[in-house]
Image (cartoon, rainbow, N blue to C red; front, side, top):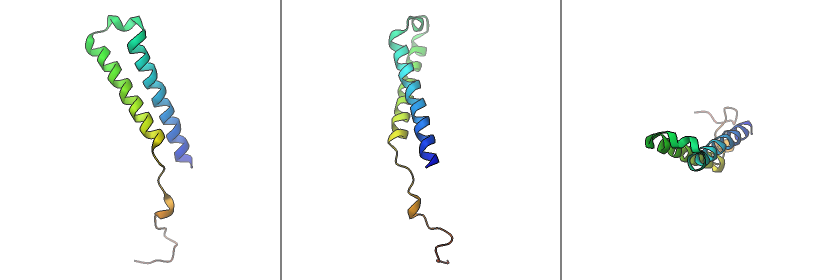
Amino acid sequence: MRSVILQRILAGLLLLIGFLAMAASHTFPFLDDLSELAEVAVAVGGAACLSAGVWLWLRKPADRSSAPSAGDGESP
């Protein structure tokens, strides 16, 4: 359960960073002073953060009930 909460927090942070980077690449005038390569890097980094955030948010947690436990009575 704890890993799901940490996963959602990380996904939320990545989504926030991605949205801020995409908004900065389209609206803020200080990016006009940067080179074309830097503007593209901000946009690509924002898209990567958004993609990773969506992937983490939608990823299903590992099902621990299917993993064999040491005390289930089976011996190798």
